[in-house]
Length: 392
Image 1: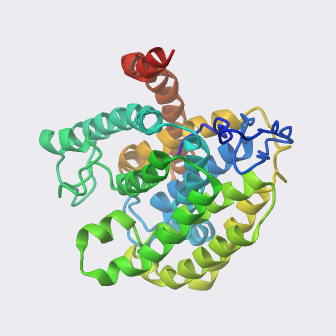
Image 2: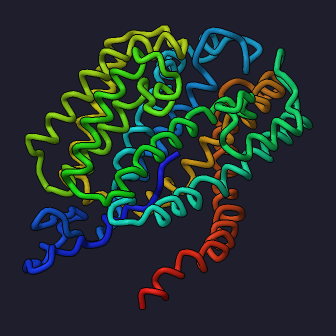
């Protein structure tokens, strides 16, 4: 899903012969660069952690309760949870929020980084938990209860899924939720161009304009590779997140960022019916548009630092478990619901499965992500440090 790091990036040196004024102090986590680029390390934006968990839980409810089929319940979710079911139908919008937050945070964490540092951060963030989730989900599919019509997971399928490239390789994901990771990877690949050239306000803004235009032209180009790389269906949300980070850096909404945000919103509302149709969401377009617009407004408040005072102690934990919760909730939770909901009852099953999925997510964070990330960081460290030693 998206990086928990909220580093604003290293200061950009002034041109030769120019005087570099000191950066203004950080107020409530806001970055206020001067002279077109310098930055300082900003405190964690804790509210983003809580929003990640909220987005993950909305997706969880969507997969457990949305739709009118019986799976994962022997009776329909509409019959068992008449009110909550109607709300859960909109839970897929959590993915939209994930993409918007990802645009914000990836721009933030990639600012001032080298291409090597950028990709090392992405690998350390995504893969340790993903590998664990693939193995765990594959084991559950092969050894646990199976829902009607579920295909068997093969060893080759599991091994291919470990690359996170199963979709372009034409292999089914071990878990259906993994499709979003392919969208994330393509976003990282595109943003690598900005990182390679060197991040600056103007370059990032130009990147947003070019990507937005490219996402409009790609579907009509007749070039499948271009259509794949530019992620036209979801580009608007990533672009909006990037633009909100530019607002964060400037400390205010400037004309250019307002234009980028307006364009992303207009493209989003145009593509929203197709997104809903492709994903099978037969629900009210106006409600979805209003919900996404509310996400824009909320991200605007975060970008302007209006929510920086929210520093509840549980928020970092919420951010830590959101990604593993997203990865494992369906492959594990749906099986438990299908097998035992009749014996346990609807509400005890739902609440118990959600609590159990959150516990498993926390255990994966503590017992898998932390040690495996430390190991990978040590393995990557010699190459990462070599240029610094040579420069010294």
